[in-house]
Length: 215
Image 1 (cartoon, rainbow, N blue to C red):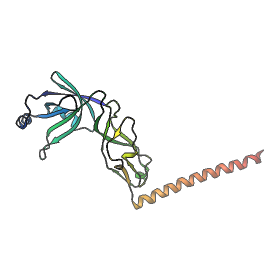
Image 2: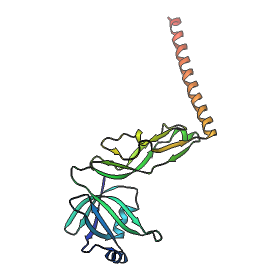
Image 3: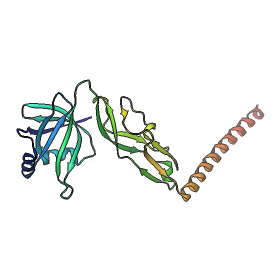
């Protein structure tokens, strides 16, 4: 997992008035929990932008003065109108303890069904997982190259070593939507592939039949 460093300052006072003052100064109240105690701190909003406006998931080294904590991002709250960051939650990474977080889903390959006119439907861009920090990948990578019209890949179909899926097993991650024209194209392709196979077999049989005559 990629690593990044975020600098901040431990909060001396915790409350709504203090939080409002911090936001007026361009700072964001934060909390990191999951360790021996919750740590309340604040950081410059521009510093936190590095882990918000990116699809990447990071192992974060929080440097809070003399206090250093390793954590992962858990949640973020934004202003409903201005859309500026209001608060951010982190979970401390404790040695020997599994962590839960969301990982981005990355699709690779060019699906057969899409080439035949089907429509690719991504139903999950992120998936909630659990595992030891050293075992967690940067992304959940799915090869869709063999998917045909009507095929789906569900959470239960995914098997990643050291990763426990915390989503419902029947949740659809990606699907190739059916269409009348796409089905016709795909059936034609399958028929063509079958014909090529029969032709190859026939050619092989003819060659085998000619061999004894030469002797």
